[in-house]
Image 1: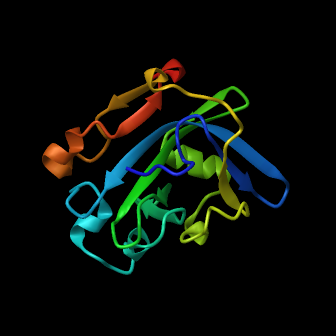
Image 2: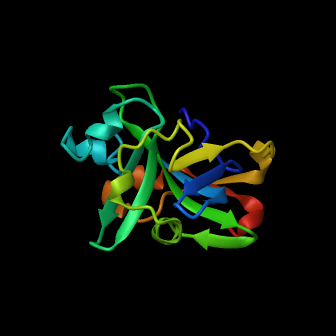
Amino acid sequence: MVLLNCRIGKYLVRENGDGAVAGKIIEVEAYVGGEDRACHASKGRTARTEVLFGPPGISYVYLIYGMYHMLNVVTERPEFPAAVLIRAIEVDGELIDGPGKLCREFGINRSLNRLDMTHGSQLWFEDRGERVSRKQVGTFPRIGVDYAGAWAKKPWRFRLLDSGA
């Protein structure tokens, strides 16, 4: 499973017009392939999910419950739909826990859907040299996807252990 630079311990950076704000990635959740019943691509290729079938590094931003935006980044080769949801970040020692809160705090909405996050413009990931060992990252079942049956129990949620997992 390719995670690009959206891994635990890397930084999510958002240029908002007034400067850049950055947060250390604390938690992510993986959605892998059309067979994964929790992945939006499991329902087939649609206008909404087309981005998941594209190249890695592209943002997939959607609205849930009519009120919360969710930031994902495509992670696999073209034609294999997979993405990672950014669930929590830490900004200046403050934990922003929850993908909806994260998007609200960073001003992320559907206008950033299909953005190439590899260009370092508007929204991107940075490696700031901090090393995170595998022992520092816990694996947990995914959240909010009970409808996916056994797929919901996959340990595809990853969280930095010293950040309140």
